[in-house]
Image (cartoon, rainbow, N blue to C red; front, top):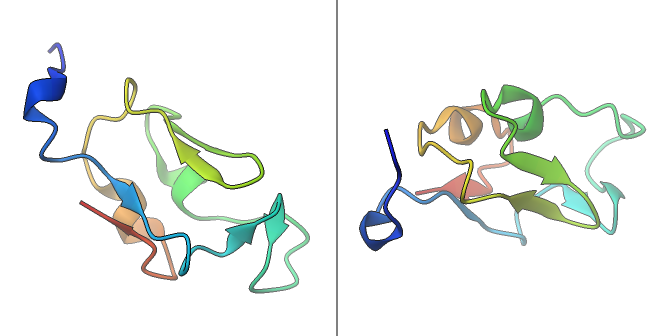
Length: 77
């Protein structure tokens, strides 16, 4: 199924104030970067951790699995 950006109503958004990943590291615990959350939950590898968490909208299916996996409530539609 092709995705049409004109109908991007299911786009996942990131609230960076709530996101635990800041400046290239986890800022909320002592996991040492061994996080298990949105990035690992994404079935199509559309989310990456760089300096901040980023979502590749061209890959994102809008399935919401990442939203459920985020322990900090930083992701939403």
